[in-house]
Length: 216
Image (cartoon, rainbow, N blue to C red; front, side):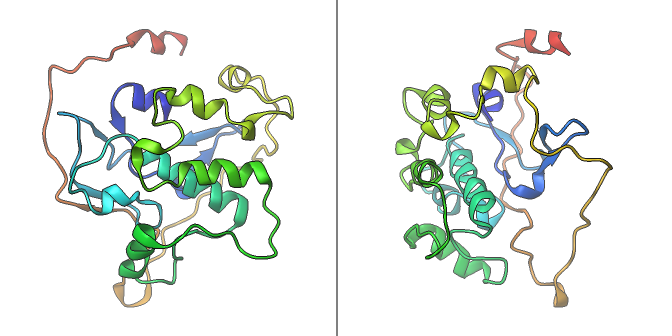
């Protein structure tokens, strides 16, 4: 996400289904079908997956930026830690989910143990004011990566990027999950939607840091 956002690219579809593990146990993000470069300061197309869409994407009156992905990151962490979604679920209607994203309070299931630091980073990301989200301020991703959630257990982002960590799970074979259509052709709430996408092009755009690919 940091790599994309440094290039003013909003991914807009961060969710568990798009986070895959490679043969070494390292996470890879796939499916850039709705990703879009932020031009003229703001995006206005309604696109993404309802359960993971940020409030400002659902009602893009003022437009939105790459900070919409930070909300989706908070949803992913909640999903990974709790095992369900904070606003609606796959059985709710699209309208119910969108209303919950816009107005429902953030709650954690009673009786379920969620670590204090996990709750802290989730609350810091699932802030409806996009400018107040962790990682959206002047500190940017430095502030996000400095959160206490990432401390301990011999974890460091330098070790992660240099692939020197020992992943907790390493796949032993390739596994895929086929998309399943809902009976009656109803919209799957884990499916991506895109309404009035922008088709602007910018042939003059250049990568601000093209040397990144030299390491591959």
